[in-house]
Image (cartoon, rainbow, N blue to C red; front, side, top):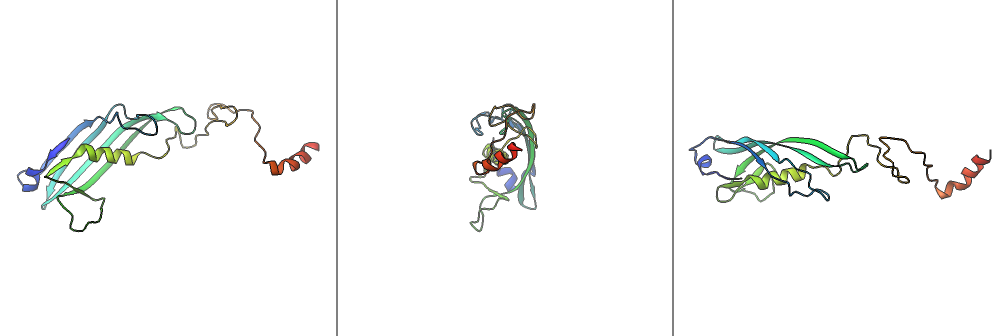
Length: 166
């Protein structure tokens, strides 16, 4: 969604409401596309004391797989984005509080895509204490306990034999 900011920057309009769904079904996370239902973007652009503010909420459902046990995962993400919209920055430092627009036009889709990509965690887990899979038999340790013996450090094998003899 491209938004023309001329009316807001010139003072003709003081607020512009935003409410739309962005299709990010082509976003790739790991090796799959986790966003099936789109991303809800709700909020507004408003001008206050000749400063233009962007205040939006981004929410979406993430459909994926647990990185430990490979079970299906559905998680809801929701977060706020608050930025100041400017046409140029005085100092060239890259500041996360500002959005620099050119030609008085804001590409909201690009911003939302970037924010969603940055908000996704490095690992997705089905639950905080996911036990994962047994490395020997592949059993899901969240569902059942396997009877596999733990590997013994070869340096301790001699000590283990002493304990077995008793």
